[in-house]
Amino acid sequence: MLNSQKKLYALGRLKSGEMNKSEAAYAQHLEQLKSAGEILWYKFEAVTLKLAKDTRYTPDFVVMSKNCGLELHEVKGFWQDDAKAKIKVAASLFPFRFIAVFIRTKKEGGGWRTEEF
Image (cartoon, rainbow, N blue to C red; front, side, top):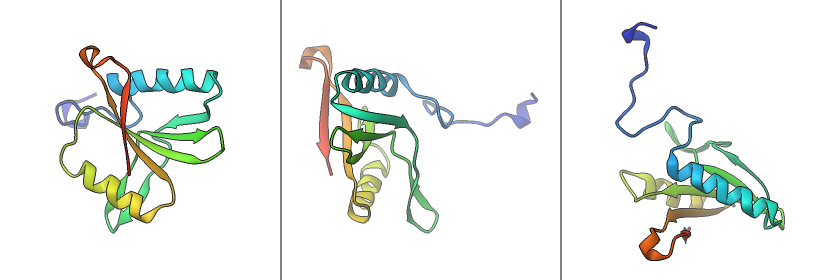
């Protein structure tokens, strides 16, 4: 492939459909929840929501809870750019439970911290 044909990505960004380390760790967590019967199903980058003309939001995971409700989970190390604004707008427009998920450090006891919108 020629250099001119390669897509350039911002530092730290992955191709669509590829998980970063935090997302991969969260997928493992979701798999454990699924095995325990706490959730029924999940999928990475399964939906894209149209927020406005030329503005879209793709949550990291769609999760089906054990009561068959759909939740949209966003895995974050920290908030940047317009990510928090987009999730707030999406939560105001769509009837889903929106959850931001942050990995806790070992010093914080590990696991996951959540913020619901």
